[in-house]
Image 1 (cartoon, rainbow, N blue to C red):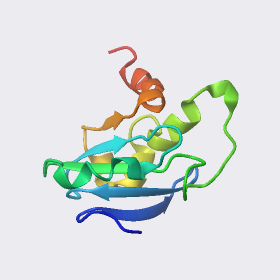
Image 2 (cartoon, rainbow, N blue to C red):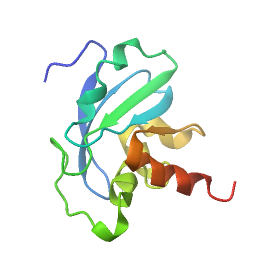
Image 3 (cartoon, rainbow, N blue to C red):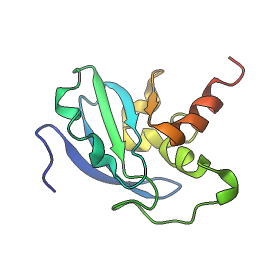
Amino acid sequence: MDLPAGVSGHKVATSRLRMRYIESGPPGGVPIVLIHGNLSTGRFFEHLMPGAPATYRLIAPDMRGFKDTERLPIDATRGFRDWADDASNRGRRHVGRLAPLAAQRDELLLLGGRVSIPEGARGHAGR
């Protein structure tokens, strides 16, 4: 896989599924998880990674059923929540598997439309 300089591709098995992702930035950087939309993959964001500030660790997974991430059934009664849970597990546990230091930090940003909206709402409920 040809990726820009400073961007690497990996696979990880979470408790939910086997997921492929690309990443860039320092291991201790603030984790930013970039969620692609329909008809694309995590590589949609690869052009942003080399120019990102050095304080950020950008992580762009291939969501469930896309590219090399496991194709598991989606529970249509949950809307986009299966994808949101795959990406973050309510904030950190699975992202911690994607970026080990993400689980040790207070900062975590999820960016990417409909998958991130339900997760963001859960994460800020009651605040």
